[in-house]
Image (cartoon, rainbow, N blue to C red; front, side, top):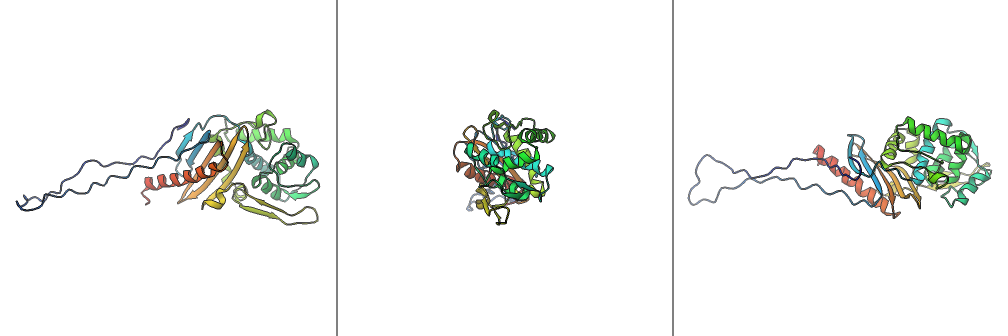
Length: 304
């Protein structure tokens, strides 16, 4: 269900009371006949409050949509864009390929006041390392370097991103750059529904799913690059057991965004929050949504 509706798992409610019948009339001095207990299920807990502009939460194991709020509305998604960037790079490159960081890659992040992986011009890092620089600290410098090489050039790389979106059935997604920054053309747009679909695809990829779930990644110093230590901006990895990632994002236009996923009791839950006004609240909301959806799944299967 889309556009604000919340779909809850149904459960049967027993009503009324049943008298205990013995087949004999009770003695005059005996206590009144007892009623059998009425086992009325407790009411289902309401869905957690969501302040994000758009939200979507699905159990991909069963296909159950737990939450859908303006899930097909086209909105900017900030650095969630980099999920597609990583997806495209892995289809163009080998993990062992070496990319030389250029001044324009570093300058791109600085000029746009963007998050970065602290890269310096002249460093030579593998694609594996740079993908971690994209997904963990959300480095616009690492993103720019990969798009420059595997487009080749930014325009060609973005064309490949949009071609991939079409092939994956992301009908309401359009990219205008590789990092989700406001320029050019607002950074493109997508929907909570499309981003959940993309997250499902990424989590089925062995390499990307492993990178998205990394809490911290270290690059040891060599003669061709400095040492780097990157911490994942997704705080759920350090707070919620079973979290699989996958990406955070922020621009003034997009607000605070989060694509998240977790495996719980045999169920894979994938959610997207777009446009929360507060940075920390998106993580608290995601945590509550995961707990709530897990309880719904347990109630439905009778797994108490």
